[in-house]
Length: 88
Image (tube, rainbow, N blue to C red; front, side, top):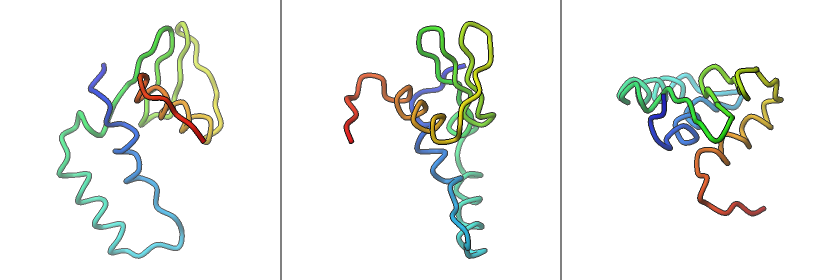
């Protein structure tokens, strides 16, 4: 399934640093519940790679690849906007 390029932004709602306020958590949950399901769940595809954002899984040629969280986030950004040039 491919629903577009919303995955990176949608997942930013899940990043909640500790300590956090219950109001902040509640507001983010309400925002997620207002979104259509296609904006929350996404599988990005590029060549022989598939990235399932909610499951935090990456597959290449049908085999799962284990990535550290930071590697996964970077790959998600790059796959989410393949035509964009990214710099540091």
